[in-house]
Image (cartoon, rainbow, N blue to C red):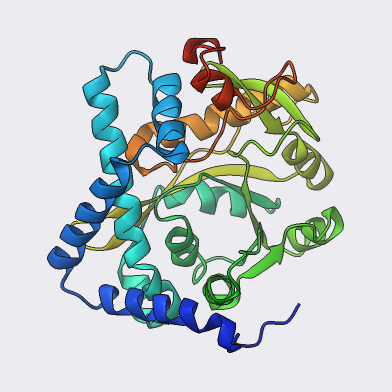
Length: 314
């Protein structure tokens, strides 16, 4: 794959946008955060499919919370992600020392203890406001590899890939193959694996996620069984008070895999849900995690909007 700097005239508008992001990054923190809050609030007021998906997800995952509390989480979610977006140039061009200094790794013992066993290690990563910054925070300390989906915008794809490749981390494009992942694990690289999205019924099993059936990829148990790996859950948070990234690690999955696809998918989903509950606003709620209908009736978000399905029935 060509990784040269994309400079075709068609990319110039994207470079202008990146330049604007660079200028926003260099603003004083309070000014930048206020601007992010203003823009996030404007966007959150729009009646878009994304905003409706956020509301449906929060209602599904936190049914016992008052609407006012869920609305506050949705508002905070939008602000945190806008603030983290404005800090993206730090991942691309920030010096190594500043990246290390502005990161905090919590419960690092869980990852270190897993590595100390001599077994391969998989990081079960949750989508969050500081996803890229969190992995970047870990990469100076641990040899990372992971699958990523190339972005449609070639400029952003170049910059994101470049950032993920810093400190000798190895990003592998989706579709690289099972064999390359296994090879990296057996060579001592820590695999970063995301499995909180709904990628459709193929290769998935329907398992509970926050009490609702979710199409859950069944790939991780195969990887773990093949390599005898340990699985350590992780989520990264953006701290708007000091522009830092907080990487939170959790105790490795126990008795995993069991060989039962439903039990294994449920255990993994429960681990992901635990990372989300730590600070719910940090999760990427725009993801359509309940997209696939178990009965094959099309998207469940569409069914809800048409009144054919209640959120409680997901």
